[in-house]
Amino acid sequence: MYRSLILKVVSLLVIVLITSPDAVAQRKWHDKYYETLTDNDFRDFKLFNQPINLKKIDYKVLNAAVFFVSNEARLERGLKALTYNPHLEVMAWNHSRSMGQKDFFAHINKKDRKRKEPKDRAELAGIANPLIAENISSIGGYRFRSYLELADYLIDGWIDSPPHRKTLYGTDAVQLGCGVYYYTGLWQKNRDIYKQGNGFWLATQNFQLYETVKSKDAKDKGPK
Image (tube, rainbow, N blue to C red; front, side, top):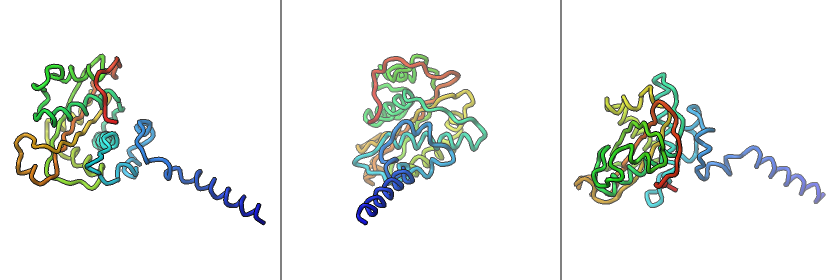
């Protein structure tokens, strides 16, 4: 009797583990999800729908959410989806962080000569053949319920802006990396927004054009 009961319990545990992989998966971001998630299912991905903890932002999840919503927008326009490249993510995230910490908003970084042009930032990120197009965005004074809600807001903003929309829908793009950084200090003298206590989201999209990225040793690192 006891042996039969034990076998039933063991069998039940095995069934749970086999039939419920999401109970173990989706607790932490892995770059393999860039290949396994699709336009049809990424919106149901648990990590994208979790609340944003401003004291412990998961930038890898946020960057990925922006990537998938970017591709969704392209597919809805009848364009091909872009493949993920980690060097482009490193490049994008470091530029967003620089804009926050160095108090500027531009494609040209006048505060750091080593990072002045997109090609400079690409080389620091380990891109040997930079052919870069770039979108940037800043959002202040808003709270977002989830990583996906923030990603949607960013992409909608780029789509509503003709020059940014042109870059997002570029037919020469082949790869994409996205990087968002949250800055809590006074930024660009926007005191009214800062006083709301919601900080600033700085976002960058980096597109590699014409040919895929050729890698080299990188000096910059991406978010953990």
